[in-house]
Amino acid sequence: MTDLKMRSVSEDFKEEELRQIIEMLFFAYRDFTKEPDKMLEEIGLGRAHHRTVYFIGRNPGITVTGLLDILKIRKQSLSRVLNQLISEAYVFQKIGDDDRRKKLLFLTDKGLVLEQRLTANQRKRIANACLGKNEHAINGFKDILTAIINEIDQWRFSSSTTNSIFNERSTTHSNRGVE
Amino acid sequence: MTDLKMRSVSEDFKEEELRQIIEMLFFAYRDFTKEPDKMLEEIGLGRAHHRTVYFIGRNPGITVTGLLDILKIRKQSLSRVLNQLISEAYVFQKIGDDDRRKKLLFLTDKGLVLEQRLTANQRKRIANACLGKNEHAINGFKDILTAIINEIDQWRFSSSTTNSIFNERSTTHSNRGVE
DNA sequence: AAAATATGTCAATATGACTGACTTAAAAAT
DNA sequence: ATTTTTAAGTCAGTCATATTGACATATTTT
Image (cartoon, rainbow over all chains, first blue to last red; front, side):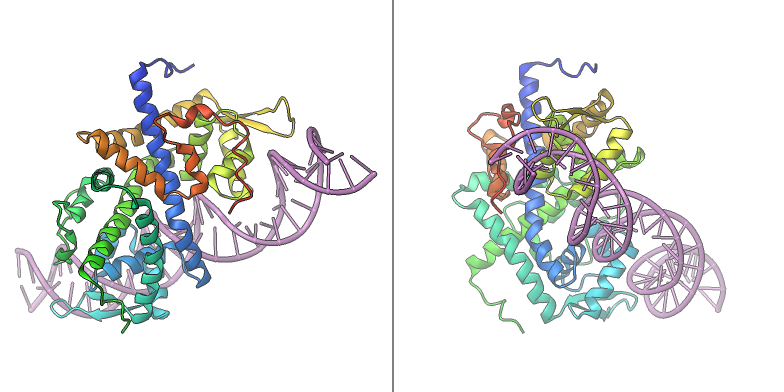
Protein backbone atom coordinates (compact mmCIF):
# COMPACT_ATOMS: atom_id res chain seq x y z
CA MET A 1 0.00 0.00 0.00
CA THR A 2 1.16 3.48 -0.67
CA ASP A 3 1.73 5.43 2.51
CA LEU A 4 -0.25 8.35 1.19
CA LYS A 5 -3.05 8.03 3.68
CA MET A 6 -1.31 9.19 6.86
CA ARG A 7 -1.43 12.94 7.15
CA SER A 8 -2.51 15.52 9.61
CA VAL A 9 -6.05 16.78 9.85
CA SER A 10 -5.06 20.18 8.56
CA GLU A 11 -3.33 18.63 5.58
CA ASP A 12 -6.39 16.54 4.93
CA PHE A 13 -8.54 19.60 5.04
CA LYS A 14 -6.34 21.43 2.59
CA GLU A 15 -6.25 18.47 0.26
CA GLU A 16 -10.01 18.21 0.47
CA GLU A 17 -10.48 21.88 -0.24
CA LEU A 18 -8.05 21.81 -3.13
CA ARG A 19 -9.74 18.77 -4.64
CA GLN A 20 -13.08 20.51 -4.44
CA ILE A 21 -11.65 23.39 -6.40
CA ILE A 22 -10.15 21.02 -8.97
CA GLU A 23 -13.57 19.49 -9.46
CA MET A 24 -15.32 22.84 -9.60
CA LEU A 25 -13.01 23.86 -12.41
CA PHE A 26 -13.83 20.71 -14.32
CA PHE A 27 -17.60 21.04 -13.93
CA ALA A 28 -17.60 24.78 -14.50
CA TYR A 29 -15.59 24.58 -17.69
CA ARG A 30 -17.61 21.66 -18.97
CA ASP A 31 -20.87 23.53 -18.51
CA PHE A 32 -19.43 26.84 -19.60
CA THR A 33 -18.62 25.46 -23.05
CA LYS A 34 -21.58 23.13 -23.55
CA GLU A 35 -24.20 25.53 -24.87
CA PRO A 36 -21.93 27.43 -27.25
CA ASP A 37 -20.68 24.06 -28.51
CA LYS A 38 -24.25 23.12 -29.29
CA MET A 39 -24.92 26.38 -31.14
CA LEU A 40 -21.75 25.92 -33.15
CA GLU A 41 -22.57 22.36 -34.05
CA GLU A 42 -25.80 23.51 -35.67
CA ILE A 43 -23.86 25.57 -38.17
CA GLY A 44 -21.11 23.03 -38.71
CA LEU A 45 -18.48 24.69 -36.56
CA GLY A 46 -16.66 23.57 -33.42
CA ARG A 47 -15.10 24.95 -30.30
CA ALA A 48 -11.90 25.76 -32.14
CA HIS A 49 -13.86 28.09 -34.40
CA HIS A 50 -15.39 29.73 -31.37
CA ARG A 51 -12.03 30.55 -29.85
CA THR A 52 -10.72 31.85 -33.15
CA VAL A 53 -13.74 34.05 -33.75
CA TYR A 54 -13.65 35.22 -30.16
CA PHE A 55 -10.06 36.37 -30.17
CA ILE A 56 -10.28 37.96 -33.60
CA GLY A 57 -13.31 39.90 -32.40
CA ARG A 58 -11.42 40.88 -29.31
CA ASN A 59 -8.28 41.87 -31.17
CA PRO A 60 -9.28 43.21 -34.58
CA GLY A 61 -6.32 43.15 -36.92
CA ILE A 62 -4.53 40.41 -35.05
CA THR A 63 -2.11 38.38 -37.17
CA VAL A 64 -2.03 34.63 -37.58
CA THR A 65 1.04 34.47 -35.38
CA GLY A 66 -0.70 36.55 -32.75
CA LEU A 67 -3.57 34.10 -32.70
CA LEU A 68 -1.26 31.12 -32.49
CA ASP A 69 0.38 32.80 -29.56
CA ILE A 70 -2.89 33.12 -27.69
CA LEU A 71 -4.31 29.74 -28.56
CA LYS A 72 -1.04 27.86 -28.20
CA ILE A 73 -1.84 25.49 -31.02
CA ARG A 74 -0.03 24.67 -34.26
CA LYS A 75 -0.28 26.64 -37.43
CA GLN A 76 -1.65 23.61 -39.24
CA SER A 77 -4.44 23.24 -36.72
CA LEU A 78 -5.40 26.88 -36.94
CA SER A 79 -5.16 26.81 -40.70
CA ARG A 80 -8.11 24.52 -41.29
CA VAL A 81 -10.26 26.41 -38.83
CA LEU A 82 -9.30 29.80 -40.22
CA ASN A 83 -9.79 28.75 -43.84
CA GLN A 84 -13.27 27.55 -43.06
CA LEU A 85 -14.11 30.77 -41.23
CA ILE A 86 -12.85 32.81 -44.19
CA SER A 87 -14.56 30.71 -46.85
CA GLU A 88 -17.83 30.92 -44.94
CA ALA A 89 -17.38 34.67 -44.55
CA TYR A 90 -17.09 34.96 -40.80
CA VAL A 91 -13.59 36.38 -41.08
CA PHE A 92 -11.66 38.39 -43.67
CA GLN A 93 -7.99 39.18 -44.14
CA LYS A 94 -6.23 42.41 -44.96
CA ILE A 95 -2.59 42.70 -45.95
CA GLY A 96 -0.56 44.66 -43.44
CA ASP A 97 0.40 48.23 -44.41
CA ASP A 98 3.80 48.35 -42.77
CA ASP A 99 4.64 44.68 -43.26
CA ARG A 100 3.06 43.12 -46.29
CA ARG A 101 3.85 39.60 -45.10
CA LYS A 102 1.31 39.97 -42.35
CA LYS A 103 -2.35 39.21 -42.90
CA LEU A 104 -4.49 41.08 -40.46
CA LEU A 105 -7.64 39.30 -39.39
CA PHE A 106 -11.06 40.88 -38.83
CA LEU A 107 -14.60 39.67 -38.28
CA THR A 108 -17.17 40.32 -40.98
CA ASP A 109 -20.63 41.43 -39.92
CA LYS A 110 -21.66 37.79 -40.07
CA GLY A 111 -18.74 36.94 -37.83
CA LEU A 112 -19.62 39.72 -35.42
CA VAL A 113 -23.16 38.42 -35.13
CA LEU A 114 -21.96 34.89 -34.45
CA GLU A 115 -19.43 36.07 -31.91
CA GLN A 116 -22.09 38.09 -30.11
CA ARG A 117 -24.47 35.17 -30.03
CA LEU A 118 -21.88 32.83 -28.53
CA THR A 119 -20.47 35.33 -26.10
CA ALA A 120 -23.90 36.49 -24.96
CA ASN A 121 -24.53 32.99 -23.70
CA GLN A 122 -21.31 32.83 -21.74
CA ARG A 123 -21.67 36.38 -20.46
CA LYS A 124 -25.09 35.54 -19.13
CA ARG A 125 -23.77 32.49 -17.35
CA ILE A 126 -21.02 34.51 -15.68
CA ALA A 127 -23.33 37.39 -14.87
CA ASN A 128 -25.82 35.02 -13.25
CA ALA A 129 -23.04 33.41 -11.25
CA CYS A 130 -21.99 36.83 -9.97
CA LEU A 131 -25.52 37.87 -9.08
CA GLY A 132 -25.82 38.70 -5.42
CA LYS A 133 -22.10 38.38 -4.83
CA ASN A 134 -20.30 41.39 -3.44
CA GLU A 135 -17.30 43.13 -4.94
CA HIS A 136 -14.86 41.33 -2.66
CA ALA A 137 -16.12 37.96 -3.78
CA ILE A 138 -15.96 38.95 -7.45
CA ASN A 139 -12.48 40.38 -7.08
CA GLY A 140 -11.40 37.29 -5.19
CA PHE A 141 -12.73 35.18 -8.00
CA LYS A 142 -10.88 37.15 -10.63
CA ASP A 143 -7.66 37.35 -8.66
CA ILE A 144 -7.42 33.65 -8.00
CA LEU A 145 -8.50 32.70 -11.49
CA THR A 146 -5.81 34.97 -12.88
CA ALA A 147 -3.24 33.48 -10.54
CA ILE A 148 -4.00 30.01 -11.92
CA ILE A 149 -2.88 31.18 -15.35
CA ASN A 150 0.78 30.71 -16.25
CA GLU A 151 2.66 33.93 -15.55
CA ILE A 152 3.48 34.38 -19.21
CA ASP A 153 -0.16 35.15 -19.96
CA GLN A 154 -1.16 37.01 -16.81
CA TRP A 155 -0.28 40.41 -18.28
CA ARG A 156 -3.49 40.13 -20.30
CA PHE A 157 -5.34 40.81 -17.05
CA SER A 158 -2.96 43.27 -15.44
CA SER A 159 -5.68 43.87 -12.89
CA SER A 160 -4.70 47.17 -11.28
CA THR A 161 -8.44 47.89 -11.30
CA THR A 162 -8.01 49.07 -14.89
CA ASN A 163 -9.43 47.11 -17.76
CA SER A 164 -6.50 45.87 -19.70
CA ILE A 165 -8.32 45.89 -22.99
CA PHE A 166 -7.44 49.39 -23.97
CA ASN A 167 -4.01 48.07 -24.69
CA GLU A 168 -5.94 46.83 -27.72
CA ARG A 169 -2.80 45.11 -28.93
CA SER A 170 0.02 47.30 -30.08
CA THR A 171 2.20 44.70 -31.73
CA THR A 172 1.66 41.95 -29.24
CA HIS A 173 3.44 42.51 -25.99
CA SER A 174 6.44 40.94 -27.62
CA ASN A 175 6.12 38.33 -24.95
CA ARG A 176 8.10 35.63 -26.65
CA GLY A 177 11.48 34.86 -25.32
CA VAL A 178 10.07 33.40 -22.17
CA GLU A 179 8.89 29.81 -21.79
CA MET B 1 -23.17 47.30 -39.62
CA THR B 2 -24.67 45.65 -36.64
CA ASP B 3 -25.96 48.11 -34.10
CA LEU B 4 -24.19 46.30 -31.32
CA LYS B 5 -21.76 49.08 -30.61
CA MET B 6 -24.07 51.67 -29.04
CA ARG B 7 -24.43 51.03 -25.35
CA SER B 8 -24.02 52.89 -22.14
CA VAL B 9 -20.73 53.22 -20.34
CA SER B 10 -21.94 51.00 -17.52
CA GLU B 11 -23.04 48.34 -19.97
CA ASP B 12 -19.69 48.58 -21.65
CA PHE B 13 -17.97 48.14 -18.36
CA LYS B 14 -20.01 45.09 -17.52
CA GLU B 15 -19.42 43.60 -20.92
CA GLU B 16 -15.73 44.29 -20.57
CA GLU B 17 -15.56 42.74 -17.13
CA LEU B 18 -17.52 39.70 -18.24
CA ARG B 19 -15.29 39.22 -21.26
CA GLN B 20 -12.24 39.34 -19.05
CA ILE B 21 -13.69 36.58 -16.95
CA ILE B 22 -14.51 34.54 -20.04
CA GLU B 23 -10.89 34.84 -21.12
CA MET B 24 -9.55 34.06 -17.67
CA LEU B 25 -11.52 30.84 -17.70
CA PHE B 26 -10.08 29.90 -21.06
CA PHE B 27 -6.47 30.62 -20.10
CA ALA B 28 -6.81 29.14 -16.62
CA TYR B 29 -8.30 25.90 -17.85
CA ARG B 30 -5.79 25.62 -20.67
CA ASP B 31 -2.86 25.99 -18.28
CA PHE B 32 -4.49 23.94 -15.56
CA THR B 33 -4.61 20.89 -17.81
CA LYS B 34 -1.38 21.33 -19.73
CA GLU B 35 1.11 19.75 -17.34
CA PRO B 36 -0.99 16.72 -16.40
CA ASP B 37 -1.64 16.22 -20.12
CA LYS B 38 2.09 16.11 -20.69
CA MET B 39 2.64 13.57 -17.89
CA LEU B 40 -0.13 11.41 -19.27
CA GLU B 41 1.21 11.53 -22.78
CA GLU B 42 4.48 10.04 -21.59
CA ILE B 43 2.69 6.91 -20.47
CA GLY B 44 0.37 6.72 -23.44
CA LEU B 45 -2.72 8.09 -21.75
CA GLY B 46 -4.83 11.17 -22.36
CA ARG B 47 -6.97 13.65 -20.51
CA ALA B 48 -9.94 11.32 -20.62
CA HIS B 49 -7.96 8.78 -18.64
CA HIS B 50 -7.09 11.46 -16.12
CA ARG B 51 -10.70 12.33 -15.48
CA THR B 52 -11.65 8.69 -15.18
CA VAL B 53 -8.85 7.89 -12.75
CA TYR B 54 -9.59 11.03 -10.80
CA PHE B 55 -13.25 10.32 -10.23
CA ILE B 56 -12.72 6.65 -9.48
CA GLY B 57 -10.13 7.67 -6.88
CA ARG B 58 -12.56 10.18 -5.50
CA ASN B 59 -15.50 7.77 -5.43
CA PRO B 60 -14.16 4.28 -4.82
CA GLY B 61 -16.72 1.71 -5.85
CA ILE B 62 -18.43 4.00 -8.33
CA THR B 63 -20.28 2.25 -11.12
CA VAL B 64 -19.89 2.80 -14.84
CA THR B 65 -23.20 4.60 -14.91
CA GLY B 66 -22.09 6.80 -12.05
CA LEU B 67 -19.00 7.77 -13.96
CA LEU B 68 -20.97 8.48 -17.12
CA ASP B 69 -23.19 10.70 -15.05
CA ILE B 70 -20.27 12.76 -13.84
CA LEU B 71 -18.36 12.92 -17.08
CA LYS B 72 -21.41 13.40 -19.31
CA ILE B 73 -19.94 11.37 -22.13
CA ARG B 74 -21.19 8.27 -23.91
CA LYS B 75 -20.71 4.76 -22.72
CA GLN B 76 -18.77 3.95 -25.86
CA SER B 77 -16.31 6.75 -25.19
CA LEU B 78 -15.77 5.71 -21.61
CA SER B 79 -15.49 2.07 -22.59
CA ARG B 80 -12.25 2.43 -24.51
CA VAL B 81 -10.67 4.55 -21.82
CA LEU B 82 -11.80 2.25 -19.02
CA ASN B 83 -10.70 -0.90 -20.81
CA GLN B 84 -7.25 0.54 -21.28
CA LEU B 85 -7.04 1.57 -17.62
CA ILE B 86 -8.09 -1.92 -16.54
CA SER B 87 -5.79 -3.77 -18.94
CA GLU B 88 -2.87 -1.62 -17.82
CA ALA B 89 -3.78 -2.24 -14.19
CA TYR B 90 -4.65 1.26 -13.07
CA VAL B 91 -8.21 0.24 -12.28
CA PHE B 92 -9.96 -2.97 -11.25
CA GLN B 93 -13.59 -4.02 -11.15
CA LYS B 94 -15.56 -5.83 -8.48
CA ILE B 95 -19.01 -7.27 -8.99
CA GLY B 96 -21.61 -5.58 -6.80
CA ASP B 97 -22.84 -7.53 -3.78
CA ASP B 98 -26.43 -6.36 -3.79
CA ASP B 99 -26.75 -6.03 -7.54
CA ARG B 100 -24.54 -8.34 -9.54
CA ARG B 101 -25.10 -6.41 -12.76
CA LYS B 102 -23.07 -3.55 -11.35
CA LYS B 103 -19.34 -3.45 -11.65
CA LEU B 104 -17.79 -1.35 -8.96
CA LEU B 105 -14.64 0.47 -9.96
CA PHE B 106 -11.54 0.98 -7.81
CA LEU B 107 -8.00 2.21 -8.32
CA THR B 108 -5.15 -0.26 -7.95
CA ASP B 109 -2.04 0.87 -6.12
CA LYS B 110 -0.58 1.76 -9.50
CA GLY B 111 -3.68 3.79 -10.22
CA LEU B 112 -3.47 5.51 -6.85
CA VAL B 113 0.11 6.53 -7.50
CA LEU B 114 -0.78 7.93 -10.92
CA GLU B 115 -3.76 9.79 -9.54
CA GLN B 116 -1.64 11.31 -6.80
CA ARG B 117 1.02 12.41 -9.23
CA LEU B 118 -1.46 14.14 -11.51
CA THR B 119 -3.49 15.68 -8.76
CA ALA B 120 -0.42 16.88 -6.87
CA ASN B 121 0.41 19.05 -9.85
CA GLN B 122 -3.04 20.60 -10.01
CA ARG B 123 -3.26 20.98 -6.24
CA LYS B 124 0.01 22.85 -6.24
CA ARG B 125 -1.22 25.20 -8.95
CA ILE B 126 -4.39 25.96 -7.04
CA ALA B 127 -2.56 26.30 -3.73
CA ASN B 128 -0.08 28.72 -5.27
CA ALA B 129 -2.91 30.73 -6.76
CA CYS B 130 -4.52 31.00 -3.33
CA LEU B 131 -1.30 31.99 -1.61
CA GLY B 132 -1.63 35.34 0.09
CA LYS B 133 -5.33 35.56 -0.64
CA ASN B 134 -7.65 35.94 2.32
CA GLU B 135 -10.58 33.71 3.21
CA HIS B 136 -13.10 36.09 1.65
CA ALA B 137 -11.32 35.98 -1.67
CA ILE B 138 -11.06 32.21 -1.59
CA ASN B 139 -14.69 31.80 -0.64
CA GLY B 140 -15.68 34.26 -3.32
CA PHE B 141 -13.72 32.24 -5.82
CA LYS B 142 -15.38 29.00 -4.80
CA ASP B 143 -18.86 30.48 -4.63
CA ILE B 144 -18.76 32.01 -8.06
CA LEU B 145 -17.08 29.01 -9.62
CA THR B 146 -19.79 26.81 -8.16
CA ALA B 147 -22.48 29.13 -9.45
CA ILE B 148 -21.13 28.76 -12.98
CA ILE B 149 -21.88 25.05 -12.83
CA ASN B 150 -25.30 23.89 -14.02
CA GLU B 151 -27.61 23.54 -11.05
CA ILE B 152 -27.95 19.83 -11.59
CA ASP B 153 -24.36 19.32 -10.48
CA GLN B 154 -24.03 21.98 -7.82
CA TRP B 155 -25.08 19.59 -5.04
CA ARG B 156 -21.60 18.11 -5.29
CA PHE B 157 -20.33 21.25 -3.60
CA SER B 158 -23.19 21.87 -1.18
CA SER B 159 -20.94 24.40 0.49
CA SER B 160 -22.51 24.71 3.95
CA THR B 161 -18.91 24.80 5.17
CA THR B 162 -19.03 21.02 5.22
CA ASN B 163 -16.99 18.99 2.81
CA SER B 164 -19.46 17.26 0.59
CA ILE B 165 -17.24 14.28 0.01
CA PHE B 166 -18.47 12.25 2.91
CA ASN B 167 -21.65 11.72 0.96
CA GLU B 168 -19.37 9.21 -0.73
CA ARG B 169 -22.10 8.39 -3.24
CA SER B 170 -25.13 6.57 -2.01
CA THR B 171 -26.64 5.51 -5.28
CA THR B 172 -26.05 8.65 -7.25
CA HIS B 173 -28.38 11.47 -6.41
CA SER B 174 -30.74 9.92 -8.84
CA ASN B 175 -30.50 13.18 -10.65
CA ARG B 176 -31.57 11.96 -14.06
CA GLY B 177 -34.93 12.99 -15.22
CA VAL B 178 -33.89 16.58 -15.39
CA GLU B 179 -32.12 18.13 -18.37
C1' DA C 1 -43.04 -14.08 -18.41
C1' DA C 2 -42.09 -9.35 -19.64
C1' DA C 3 -39.85 -5.05 -18.90
C1' DA C 4 -36.27 -2.33 -17.26
C1' DT C 5 -31.48 -1.76 -15.91
C1' DA C 6 -26.29 -2.13 -16.12
C1' DT C 7 -22.85 -3.21 -18.90
C1' DG C 8 -20.47 -4.15 -23.07
C1' DT C 9 -19.44 -4.18 -28.05
C1' DC C 10 -19.32 -3.50 -33.33
C1' DA C 11 -18.92 -0.14 -36.85
C1' DA C 12 -18.66 4.27 -38.85
C1' DT C 13 -17.80 9.24 -38.40
C1' DA C 14 -16.22 13.99 -36.95
C1' DT C 15 -13.23 17.13 -34.72
C1' DG C 16 -9.26 19.02 -33.03
C1' DA C 17 -5.08 18.45 -32.23
C1' DC C 18 -0.34 16.67 -33.45
C1' DT C 19 4.42 15.92 -36.39
C1' DG C 20 7.43 16.62 -40.22
C1' DA C 21 8.62 18.56 -44.47
C1' DC C 22 8.42 21.99 -47.71
C1' DT C 23 7.05 26.54 -50.35
C1' DT C 24 6.49 31.43 -51.08
C1' DA C 25 6.97 36.15 -50.18
C1' DA C 26 8.69 39.89 -47.70
C1' DA C 27 11.69 42.03 -44.44
C1' DA C 28 15.96 42.36 -41.86
C1' DA C 29 20.74 41.52 -41.28
C1' DT C 30 25.24 40.82 -42.90
C1' DA D 1 23.49 42.35 -52.82
C1' DT D 2 23.18 38.17 -50.92
C1' DT D 3 21.84 35.59 -46.94
C1' DT D 4 18.93 34.80 -43.14
C1' DT D 5 14.84 35.27 -40.68
C1' DT D 6 10.00 35.89 -40.34
C1' DA D 7 4.97 35.31 -41.66
C1' DA D 8 2.04 32.60 -43.75
C1' DG D 9 0.39 28.53 -46.12
C1' DT D 10 0.22 23.67 -47.50
C1' DC D 11 0.64 18.44 -48.13
C1' DA D 12 0.35 14.19 -45.87
C1' DG D 13 -0.19 11.24 -42.18
C1' DT D 14 -1.41 10.20 -37.28
C1' DC D 15 -3.77 10.18 -32.84
C1' DA D 16 -7.20 11.04 -29.09
C1' DT D 17 -11.67 12.07 -27.87
C1' DA D 18 -15.96 12.15 -28.68
C1' DT D 19 -20.16 11.18 -31.49
C1' DT D 20 -24.36 8.04 -33.39
C1' DG D 21 -26.87 3.80 -34.09
C1' DA D 22 -27.62 -0.90 -33.44
C1' DC D 23 -27.26 -4.87 -30.78
C1' DA D 24 -26.11 -8.51 -27.10
C1' DT D 25 -26.05 -10.32 -22.37
C1' DA D 26 -26.96 -10.84 -17.66
C1' DT D 27 -29.60 -9.53 -13.87
C1' DT D 28 -33.18 -7.43 -11.40
C1' DT D 29 -37.79 -5.65 -11.05
C1' DT D 30 -42.55 -5.68 -12.14
